[in-house]
Each structure stands twice: as structure tokens, then as C-alpha cells.
Length: 358
Picture 1 (cartoon, helix red, strand yellow):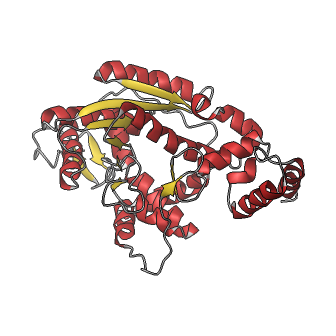
Picture 2 (picture 1 turned 30 degrees about the horizontal axis):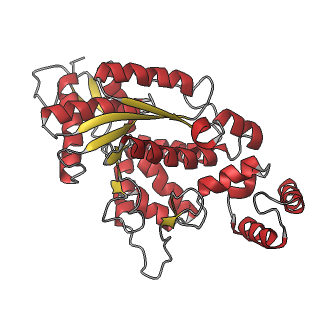
């Protein structure tokens, strides 16, 4: 059986892999070149960075953030971007998962010779994810983690005084998020998740946060895995202990099924999401500042503060789902109860009863 030859170097080297995005045979070197060039073209075409900026790379130790750190350092030196790169990691406090992955991040920090800062949920919010799961169970734990992690990244970025945060979101992640937001009818998040950069001057709904960008937006997850494997990068591959029951997992399975039938499905979903037009009459959230922590929020009290309050007061569902009813009951109780620093006993008992009957 004849050995397939690389389509890029026209047979100079035998093919080592079939590229998932194009289904064409590539040798390792040509695959590396094509993968890195596409990311470089994404960065330059979308003008993600400016010379002299400090960029925080959100580092978890997983394949996406490890490849992002490796490629960002390589391209920064190869094409003289003029960027100062730093690693920013968040320790959620998940025993047997995050503590191990952070060891990988620390090795990456030495390998790439980049500064590293690690912030923990415990020091920021007073709760670790292990403690949160014990309090709320595994049904809604991803809600807490997602909200806290997003705010923690911003707090870490402000501490480092960076200009932007670069995240490792890949094409598969974005396609999943588009479908999730369509199914939930969440127009605001649908618009945001398709943007390659959010929080900059052009983003009227999120202009107060540190801008975030996605250099790997058009990179397939399978290609990221191949790149990390053939480059022999040091990354952590264990799945989060608390994520198997996450809603995203069902969407991910559906996306993988589509990709097997038609590899271009992932990019097609992204392009479709980018073309969605929002009616001018659609009500969009207006960014403001949280009355408690001064963090950006679309509500008077940000989601993180609501979640923390619910945890501290034994009402963990306070910030989950439709929270307007809880907010109104809290406000009503504070006008009729002298104890305005915490939930009065009668309201706490009422909310707990409501949760138990659901």
C-alpha cells in the first residue's frame, strides 16, 4: 500500500497525519507551520494585540491553554509582536484535579520562562469548589465555578495590570456555546460568544472589563491535541471531577457527532453565529457596577455576590436561575426587618422551604 505524501510540501516528506479541518495528509512540520500560520493570521487580521501591550494568558495546564502559551511565545518572538506575556491561573480548590493541573502550569512557567500568578477561590470568595459542591450538590456547581472563574480572571488581570486576557477557547468551544445560547434564547451571550474580542472600546455592553481575546477561535480541538502531541508539550488531560453532569457535555457530544459526518460543521456553526442579527427592539443588558464589590454587572448586585450571599446564608439557590423573586423578597425583608446585614430568620426559613419543595 503506497504511503500518503504531504500535500503542503508536495511529497518531500511522507504524511504523518490527516488534518481534521481539511481531511488532507500532512507531514508533521507542514502541519506545525499551517497551524501556527493560521493563528498568526487570526491575530493580525483581527488586530488582537498592539505592540507594547501586556497580555495575560489564562493558564489551566490543559491542552488549550498550554498550546496557546507555547504558540503565543513562539509567534511573539518570530513576528516581533512586541508583547509582554504573563501566565494567570485560577485555583478553584478541586482536590485531585486542580492541584495536579497547577503543577503542570508551574512547569510550563519554567519551560516558557514567563511570569506566573495564581489566585484561589478560597482567598477571593471564602469558598473552595470542594466546599461549594458539598453545600449545593453536583447539579448547579458549574454555575458557581463559571461565574467565580470569570471574575477571578479579571481580578488577577487587574492585579497584574495587563492590557488584555488571552483565553484558550477553541472552535469547538465556541460552536458549543453558540448552540447552548440559541437553545436558551440568550441573545446577549450569543452576540458576545461569537466575538473574537470582548470588553474593548467597540463592545458597548462590556466596556468596563479588561478585554478578552480568543487567538484559537478557529482552531479545531482535534488539531490542538495533535499539535500538543507531536510537539510533546507538557499538559494535563484529566477531566474536571464535577463536570460530567454539565449541560455543555450533551452539546459537546452533539457537536462531535456532526463533525464526524461533516468536518466543516464546527466552522459553519461559528460563521452562522457571527451572521446572526439582533433586532434593534431586543432588550440588551446594560453594563453597570455592582453595588457591593464594584465589579462590572448588568444588575445592581452582581451574580458572584448573590452566589456568595446564598452560600454564606445557607440558601445556595439564591443566585441560580430566576433570582428576581429572591431579590424582591430580600428587599422587602430589609425594609421590614431591623437586621439588614443578613437574611432575617423568617425569610431564610421561607426561602429554604421554597427550595425543598422544588
